[in-house]
Picture 1 (cartoon, rainbow, N blue to C red):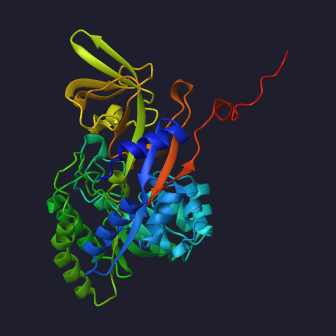
Picture 2: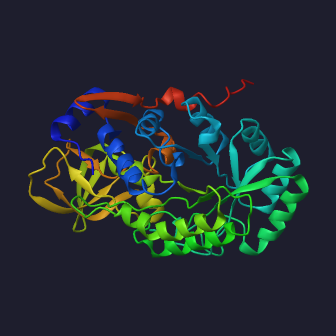
Picture 3: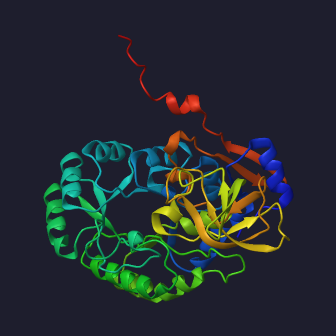
Length: 406
């Protein structure tokens, strides 16, 4: 888990200001290595879920570390992957309720589409008869950190119901479209492999009914730890848990079947902090509020999910601990990073680091209260490089059309 030193934080804040997302390049490479090592004994291809963090500098690090491809959920994510040097066969498009234009655009780029509704499959077949698709099913298994992160259970908007698979096959048969893959994703932020095992078993059962399948895509969602010093998630345990199931299935088909995985947060979350400055200390009704120069417009997970993010005072790492509430600068009661946390002797002007902010943070940023996007910095060895500039007021306003004078 990356935590910047006092010297690193002060140098970055002086040169680039705050708030700033700070990523450690070595940590990104290390997370990729762990994933690759965990599944090295299986015929696995790993696709980075780029929706987690689409900073091109970080995606390049992941690519250079040996991660095979990109899992994209929008046509623009597909475009970025191709522009970063991924070949079309190294990209999978797994949209949620895509437009017909998106299906056509991605298909014309030669990227395999992983479709999760009969409507999407019908539209694809009408545009690309004789083509190939993967089908996203609902495995009827769900697991994740929060209710909003569950994607594989009955009632989820994602995936085709198992009872609709025969109709999906029939639609494809008429159009001469081959179903070459089967996909399932149970949720984000699970820590034990039991539910994952059930989902993989279901995917393999469905794949047995599809004679042209060449891969089984088991999705992502592998959890990360949020507290310094916690024992890391045993990603190798996930590989061991499903290895036998997949190997038995693949052998029974007498075909070269591959295992696809789509990690996102596991690769990037713990590699990054959101560096912010304390602007205000306020005592009110027995609570010490520590106000920062950032808010949920930069890191929405605590407000959206109730997610825990540990916070450290990098200016006073050895200071006496005080129980405080760390809050943001937005005009919203939900703009709270942590209501009850111990922070080392917080004072106005201090720099704090909100940990594990590399996944589903910057990509969910907004201009709420007319605040600009934060800067982003990458540390490589002893060098800090700006990878995303801070958004200015003028840049925010530039998208609006000029007001017509009467």
